Length: 402
Ligand code: NAP
Ligand code: MG
Image (cartoon, rainbow, N blue to C red):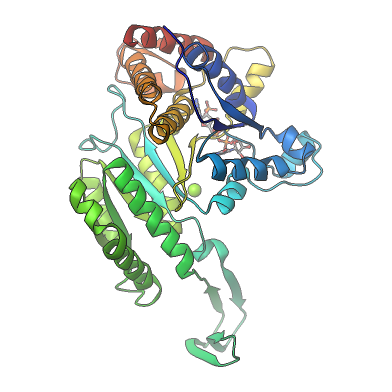
């Protein structure tokens, strides 16, 4: 087979620990033999972030703005232990946070479904994609522990010095207070990313808040979504036969459980944090979740939802065998390759991405899998493979499909 050519490079963001090992194996076994792979390479491994004072992360995000599509390996977000372990100059910020703030994106997470790994919710037949607003609310809060009796007020001082005041509570004893905010700009970006992704993937979009209780805060989210939908997306949705649907968060939870899946559920920041873990767990396995960051300007960054699988990496370093599931990382590559193919009119590249995804799914459905999948699979006699042999088994399946 002649290798598939690429016209525009992908932005390749390498990462850390076990996923960095898998990254190399995936390229050698599943990509380079089939594609004349063109990437602009950025090493986001912690050593290089430290050596470049984290400039490499900023550069990789700017390259993503330039080329439009990136694929990212999982990376360490340093904590105190990592500062010691890697002898870091500073406790560098989360690369995902840095990239997200440059791309102004929304993260969409979706499970990869395979026969034999049955969701806990038995009527879920298709993936549910969670879109989580990534700015503000309780994640940028200001809190006070009220020591005793007193009056709490919400005060806004406008640029011209005029003030608006609202009584929060007349405390008769000790208590607690919290101030949160969001901006119309951020909510608008979030809405556009969601509507755009729904059009892109031809799925219905659900959005939920608690606007009956929060008549200004949550209601503003609802209103901004509705305005943007009507002004910019309604026609496209009708053309594609997809639906935008708003409901209260508690009603949404009940409907999601009764649904068969196959839609995008847009959530406010906290709801998205909680619901994405619920949905991921109910589909079976964190190592089968994909994640894509979509900016309102139409820039995409694909990755696995899981981390660097540290425990497996330490085993690997000791020379012990690992059985780490590479599927979500492979799907990060296929997502990026498919999107690159779409943007460049490169049908062969998109078709290859599709085949590679099928190969992953078929390999697991044929009973060949990694250890963690075997624990939740209904397959009666699964063949448990190590990290490299699993990738090689996918390659064998891929060769039969090509
Ligand atoms: P993790 O790497 O997702 O791993 C948590 C546990 O889940 C693993 O120990 C493993 O369980 C299981 N697991 C996850 N992915 C797996 C896979 N592909 N195959 C098999 N098992 C898998 O999370 P963590 O241990 O909390 O974090 C490790 C590092 O990753 C941290 O430094 C964190 O900052 C970073 N992180 C990065 C990202 C990102 O870049 N997007 C996201 C999350 C975390 P067993 O050990 O029981 O086998
Ligand atoms: Mg969380």
